Amino acid sequence: MDVSLKDFVKYNIIIGFIHYLKLQFGLLLISSLEFARNYTRAHDRKEKMRLTPRDITDMQQQEEEIVTNDYVFRPSLHINNDLSTSPGKAAMYPKAASLCLPLLTDPKNGIKTMGNVGARVDIISSYLAQRNPSVSFVSVDFQSNLVELNSLLPQSDNWSFMSGYALDLFEQGKLQGDLVLFSSTSVLFTNKELRLYFNALSKSTKYSILNEGWWPAAKSPTFFRVIKPEEIDPHNSLIILGPYDNYLHNYPAILSEYGFEIVSSEIGEVPNRFYWCLQIVAKNRAIA
Image 1 (tube, rainbow, N blue to C red):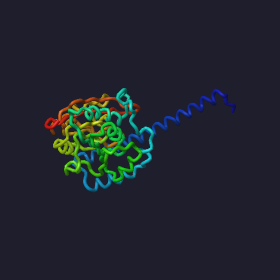
Image 2: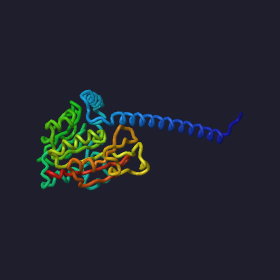
Image 3: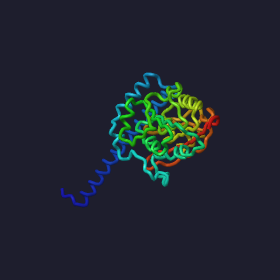
Image 4: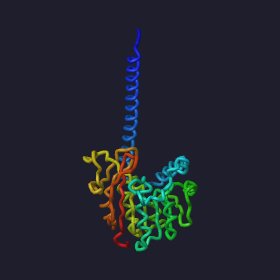
């Protein structure tokens, strides 16, 4: 049977399109299964108050198994010097730095120490330490090899590292900061764990900054719009619909319970990402 060139091309286009639909359906199915697994994991640990020693050991092993090259050698792991001229176009970490800079540079705030919780490869502290030599910066995370992970970033004498569970370190008085930053970190905490952190910070921290990914919630009447943190039950944080087992918290209400007042709060876009960025600056009413 003779087949014309036109019919041959048409046939191959149709077959190609069918294969494309099958591929997209497969990717959608994989994503759906991943989202469901993360939701289940977040739901199962929702009532936990803090990490157990076993949890901490597991977290440390998981973090240290991450391929260092993926973080240390990526060309994108830097913050441009022109950050202040176009902060709206910045990615997550530069956004965090732009929040910290005004507080650090104003002497009236009296900030002498800053801690970055969940730092891993800490381009934020590396950047800020060079520009604020009178402030001591400490990067905190589970990995025992934080020094190695950060070795290719610009170093400063006023920048150090602390390995361990940050909540324990705060409660034991081993870690303190006039300014404490959570960037892509506090969304991992359960509601009860977050409260323990803010309770510990209320003792000595002047300012707390939150720079967190803000996803759609898995079960919410506001799924088709950006939910505001104030709309969330302060005692029942929402589980996100996304590739992580994260939570959405009512930060303003919880911070207020522990003596912090909101200086600024904004939800903005993140370039080339399918989520938003929640940025909150909070001041300790008692000591700031």
